[in-house]
Image (tube, rainbow, N blue to C red):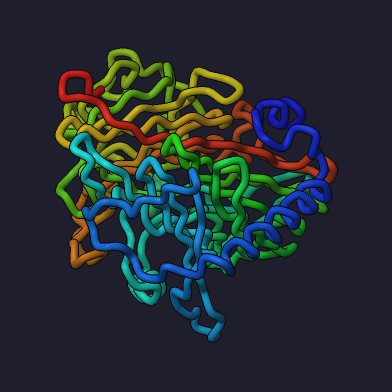
Length: 416
Ligand code: BGC
């Protein structure tokens, strides 16, 4: 864990305890609230593909507005974070969900590149497959919902056939987080905090988790994770946005070019649980070490691709520290996305289970492979694989992680 903590290259150097962080956040929050009260709220989602509003006076800012109510009647707000470079991220405290990500293409046309809904109620009623959420307490699968820790066997909720997926029936994606908007040093964002109680979904220990979304003027969305526990427990959080760089609802992602900085991946069994081997990607359809169209080999005759009928695999990233993990580029729009992370793994999921039954933003029907996820994380089912990097967090040693989603533009020739 110490090694893991050291990996975090973050703004919080010198703020090594949660108390320090909270004091810092409180100060920032007061400043942000004063500013927000002065500026008021913008409310509804801007129309798709219209230019982002100009914000000449600040590099990035955040505003808040009502969005909806969860079934018990509690109000949920939506936060709109904008940068002067044309990026706009909207997020809400239910599931710490990223509701939309709007970025320009090479002609300056702005589109929302993330799947989701225009209305809050759809997030509840349509039961989407984790659109935009923070998945936790353990993102991805734990085999048969079972693991043994310090000699004791724990049984978790099973919600994906025989397995535990994305934290169970009431994972972090379905809980209401506490939200604090902030602005500092030309960036803006929201700090979300959640308490996950001892026994929730079968996990030991009470975990306090913090997820901070920060938008910078360079059109990057940084996600910082922090967590403490009062008993040893597995923790593995990820951001589960479904991206389509052509714009949500604009066809499939098979023409997107992808690079993943990984020499190995973790093959899975027919319930998508890693077998435990770290297999070389070389000479397989999993070799994305140079830019490759996602559709080029997705139908290759490879048993691994039949298992999830497409890519749904964890890649073993080569780098350490805050390292580059993947680059996605849409040759048509010119939009690019570079993902860097402190995590050792990346789940590449090609929306295989999207099946046109969900209608999302602007009436768009979300079809199979209409988007992809790049989920930075520790490896799936790590609590049952001693040879995988450990996901166990203990009292006194906080969980820390950082991922940066940096958007850009490439010209037609170099869109890779
Ligand atoms: C998993 C998929 C799952 C999807 C749910 C991904 O993280 O790897 O197997 O279907 O989440 O949306």
